[in-house]
Image 1 (cartoon, one colour):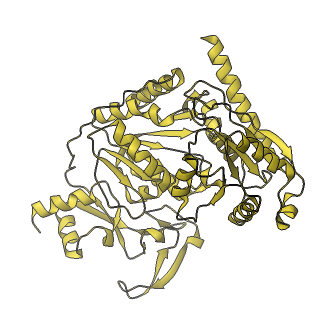
Image 2 (spheres, helix red, strand yellow):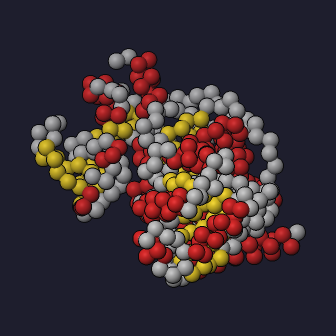
Image 3 (cartoon, rainbow, N blue to C red):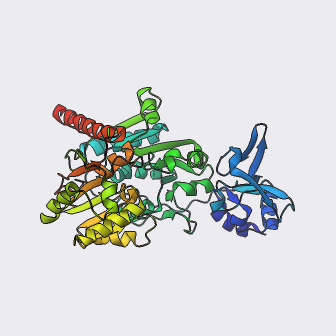
Length: 457
């Protein structure tokens, strides 16, 4: 191998933490690169005094490790079951990291977005720039519909002008694909890398990626923006939190975005351990719709008889009559299918969606285009969806899947459009839960904070 070929490989390897099979190199080429000091290799699984650790995803619990026959070491070799969907890490295998010259692409980083920020957005945008300047972590605590993406634009521009690498990481591929056109429109002419399961690897100063993709990076980003930090799976997956720390440079900045930060994060803010800026008002300066509670009895018994409670039916019919669309959340896929079937029997123009529906994007767009009056959905649509003039109902709000965070996000689907800010939100239930009460309290508190701030100006 010559140096030209090595530099070409460096484009693929730099800032990444890859298995041998992912490097696109033969073992002899990797040995040559290591000899020249252009890559270093580390075990993919290490034995510590207190047990094993997977160096890619960070798991240490014994249940994540198993043995299987290995062609390389000809033994029953330990492998990590936790991150096997990204390729098999084994005790006899290695992770490779580029240590040669960093190859920077020319960066056209001028912000071409010409929109206006609300006062709350502007305050958060300025706070973001300060956090990047002083290399301090920041929580942007913004209500659903506050316009968090627009808040990031000036901070991203500042970081890129300083020669920093920036990554926006989000839990779901759907959100990555929604962010891509918005960022490309805001930074026209700039190369932006978009990474998710199955996407080709790209190098760019600005990266949009799923949090899972961060497992393949090491010391890569100066500014790492974690979107929906409270959302599944990031909120409960220690592997993804480990991946964020591994993907950051030593003096990097973490920026957390959330409408419903965890209690631990709020505690860190109150103790002065984490800087925070709050945007309690939506970009159109109108308050969040406050949910109403409606007891509907044992609705599941009715559903088994192919019926829905009259209060649910009447609520939907009222809005449909007034040419308003209804987004009805249910606790499971099986419930979604049954409810959709029942509503069709009542001659409603209805469709259903869930995470395992390959046509869900098309169905959501058709709902936006007024093809359906009612869209029945699981929690797959609790985040990242904006539909004008939509009313929101939750059937079976007592179910544990409807956490405080989920219910706040679901409520946030209503009233997002400036022309239809008085959205209706109803929690239909067979018993009040703490999550329901806390979600309503959260929304009322944000509205009170917004009203207080507005009256002081």
